Length: 443
Image 1 (cartoon, rainbow, N blue to C red):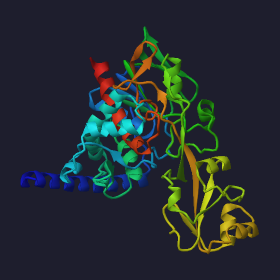
Image 2 (image 1 turned 180 degrees about the vertical axis):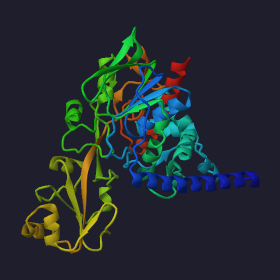
Image 3 (image 1 turned 180 degrees about the horizontal axis):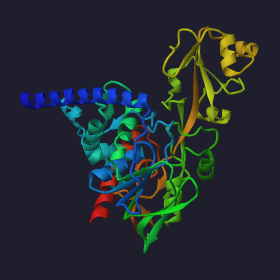
Image 4 (image 1 turned 60 degrees about the horizontal axis):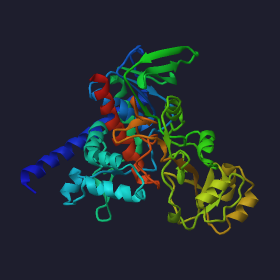
């Protein structure tokens, strides 16, 4: 590698580290002060409306605004929600500077082929190709705006596309860093709720909103982006579409089905809404639980009954809701997802169970005990049918001005569910949709 090019990349790395340090300092100060940012009043007309939550909603809104559009973000997130899919912490990219530095040849076409194969060749080839081609630039965009460097490759030989944070926790900093940029939008609301999309001749003309007092408000726009996730945050709606039970709402928030409802009422078509995969996670963090990593664990349901089927997804689903993962001495450390308890009595108080029964169930384990709450979340790869530009499709083609990105959009996963793809899809798709919506609105 030429010395000049290597030096340039070194300075870029130093700059990004300094940016992250400043971001952390400012975020910590901002959080401790608990200052609520002020936003302009909601106008009666904007270029683009984004109905979103968490990472996907923020990215879509900022992308459209950076492309020159006046943007209103209707944020369906709740203040206590993380807004980040903590079960999917790697960013899947092809042609990144980090791959180049290591001499790894991993092209967008190779990435697209890998995703298409993982989906059993049933995904949308054009959409997968667009995502792969935009992945490296999207990673660069994300790093510059959050200060989080994804410079560590998970497995350069077997999984060269997966980029992990060099240090720190992406789940703690990515979504809050982007949220701090939202006051730059033309307008923002976390209290207005969407009622109906407005169309004229099959084209988006705006959205009907309802405020906290039930008063209706019409906002006119030439484009609407739906980026609030699927239905995994509403267990009732999830059962209606998929028949799945025994899950907990998505810990990162969102996924309440609002965008899907709006689009279907407007004449959009859905794709694979009946599909869902159950993923074990730690609660409340939402980080992925790999059951094989804890072979000595005991799993107890909320009544203290031990799950004897290996604590696979089916067993956890039948238990329903929260399950307790218990490790004995020498098999885990306190902190992170686990809490330490010195003895059976203390543990019994925490779990709300009789100490004698608990002692019998956990007789094979020695104190101190390490305990974590775990549960199943539903990943929904289906959703609204979209094309390679993330335009929502109706029976006769795209509904002009309506876009969907993130987990709400079908097409990337094909006939499988790829957990490593969700974070990337929540970033790249909304970035592309935001730019396309702005281009349409401003032409």
